[in-house]
Image 1 (cartoon, rainbow, N blue to C red):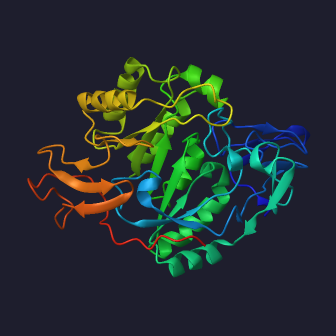
Image 2: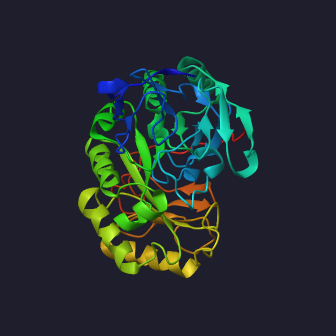
Image 3: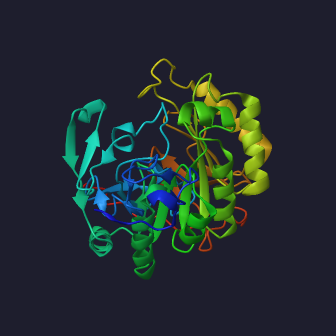
Length: 364
């Protein structure tokens, strides 16, 4: 639904400047920002997706986000809207991220893919209605995921504020292309985030993601971590694009130095999709080499996703190498932590937050 936006400035000639993401779009009257979800009408900026969801929500394992060191074994209530401030040629959620809302946020309009030449109705849900659905589901966490949640700022803030009062944890799965102003608000209500590092060079961000560079993402990660958010990082490795071992090492060393060695890093395999179909799937050997680089750089918790590998699914104690959390796929089969979430074998702190419970796992 349509609602006046937060974090914008009025300029001359009915122009506005949006300060929700690092594009800081200057938008002329009757035009939209890069994300396609924010519209200027006569000098007033509106979000078109406040309370506009692609479905009533789904229940996922939290490991699917992926978050492996935050409430492992829990279910998480997942919601999404449409639109994104990135236009990645390899996007694996492009069927919703590259759609855009109509002018009242009631429908999604798609110009390519399975919804091409069609539109579909978006579910309208107030924050209080959503919180009630989460309570009825039995979940204790909510994820803003699948499309980019930072462009959904107004709704995320209102939902997460109510969630906090209801003892429901809020999670962002995000590209991290935020601003300090938006981050200052988000850290008050968001508990955890998985931030996607597309690559560790500006060239990739400009060429593939169509944005100005990596620095805003790094700034966001540092800002959120310094304010107490639980942070995990995902890096989708694409052959011949961002698989250079030196680049991976530089990224790992940056994470250790700026976010801390306890920050989990997920290396994810690429499957050809969207507009990057000429690249092959990421070899397991590439992912396992990245895994070894991360450990050598001093990261405690490294994972491999989207493939079956002998490495990178379980969580190990960084001191004694005892299995802390054993997994089969996204299913947690054993948790070897004491009451304070320390390693049962040696007593070392693990930096893992929350203890798992049996999942219910169903779709609405």
